[in-house]
Length: 207
Length: 217
Image (cartoon, rainbow over all chains, first blue to last red; front, side, top):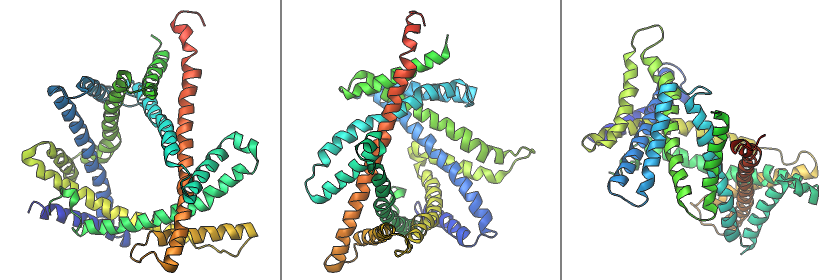
């Protein structure tokens, strides 16, 4: 029974969404529309669960004095400060929550992602050794796109930016389309497996 | 207190602490890394309260014209079930919420992905390969042959030998070019973020140092 009810809910919700697409009339239109809103509400419960789990992990880390436990209070304080400021003062522009977001969270996010530029470059150096002609092709393609994006590319040869545009518009589109179509087929197959209860790993791996 | 300058200094401090990782892992980096995790989690909780729960749930449960719409208790209860995972005795209830999310997501994604990522892409590939200049014909051919051969490469139900193998090989070539282009594009996006942070430090933060040290300006 512990699996039958969740599987029945999955089947019903999935079928309502599919029927809503093919039969956009009542009652499916009404049910589909409501279910989409309910989906967002229940999914936001997952954010609360994730946050509760984050707190649980760091409190446990401090209790057991696990490795780097000294930094756990920083995470907890950061979380609590954002929650309190957001709940008390709201999220409008100029309020403390917005101030901390603009001056701390956004810079930290941008810096974290910009750090990847260094690691991607070093990974590329190791991965892109032109070991065979296809690796050379990958390397050349990446190099051409990077060169075409900066002014020095056009200064070297004015056709480089045009070559970059062609590379992005034709071979890149062709490759990405093949991947997208393949992935869409995968999504359809996996969705059907989930709706019909064949794929159950999301329920905890129990069969 | 000048809140604007304090904000710039906060931004510069976290930026420099994070960049200190380029030298080696150190306490400054770890401090800001942990702070980022905590503040981001707090941000997303507040975001979901103000942008999802209040407009989509609370305002439907208690409509502006008064009254109480009991049907909206259902998603609220399901959202609570999600949190039940934290309590071992009732953790099984979270499966009901997961079932609802997965079912709705699967049904929704199945039709939308099929429309946007399969049908629309196939439609976009159905182009005339004999129209326009020689260069346009060549480009159209590369596009069509590239998509078809790329798909053949992903078709594993038939052994990649003979004609299928040769087509799949062509598909790998196109995919390598595409991955290289995407990779180059990603690096440039990261570099533009890096330039943005450096610009912030040089143009916004550095000019505030004399003022903070009382050196005029």
